[in-house]
Length: 383
Image 1 (cartoon, rainbow, N blue to C red):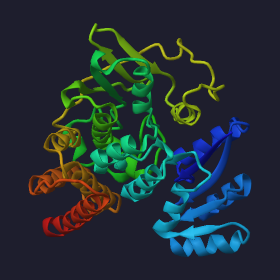
Image 2 (image 1 turned 180 degrees about the vertical axis):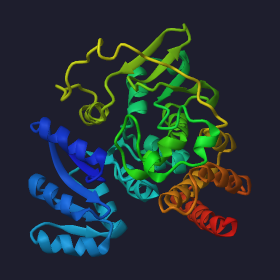
Image 3 (image 1 turned 90 degrees about the horizontal axis):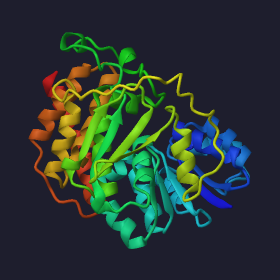
């Protein structure tokens, strides 16, 4: 029985991980849970799975949950997240807390020798070189949970890296794939949150509308699969049936396919290297008779182009870009800037950033904090 800790158990990835645990209950024991502050759902999860420790980032909510669960251990703040990440009994930690908040506990889990099911983009976007160095030093498995990276991970199993010609990440194109520039000037928050394929949290959904989500995935793929940036491509595939593919030097291709549902990559990470009975219905080829592909418009979706530029510059730039984007997305959600200003302001901020080396977690957090402060100030000045 594999013992698992979940960072972000109340989010969509965490909830689906618990669905897998229910489905394959003889294979898993949930030993630790953590969340930002949704203690109503966290309480239900804790009563069902009886974890050894519960982390709540919000200290006020942590105290409230401890009152509700007097016989269970509840730890608050970053220390609570880290306590879940290093839970002695856990063999695997599912890192699913969105944003830079999830970076530190993920690194702590790696340092503690835990295998990682990675759904937190920021771990590799902000601290890719640091994280991959620690993974190698601690000899832990880093198994991607994002559907695209899980697809590539599966396609590369048993293949030699030297045989890879290119990696192709697929993107649904988001809600504005067919919109013209004039329409994009009037994008509302409600429209941007109406993703045509996936049901995700607001920050990730906005990133999907700007294609920043795909740009972050390019950076993740760069670190995960150790391939040159010019071998990583993005293709728009509105049906989201092909989750990503790998082309080899003989020009043959392997693709991982299925209906757009996160259960499959989550379950694959949890059961790896085995496969277990799935939760989904068999694929209906007739129902999904059409597969379309389009080249992404890098001018319309500047965030994708900026992501390529960030990894080309290297050092602190991806971390800076990621944190600044997070602030700009929150400002858009709050109605303070327009949708198109997310990429315009991000480009201006990146152009003024002096690239630094990233060697430690402290370096990552310092650049992250700098980016957030400058993004906020920039918006005030530009307003």
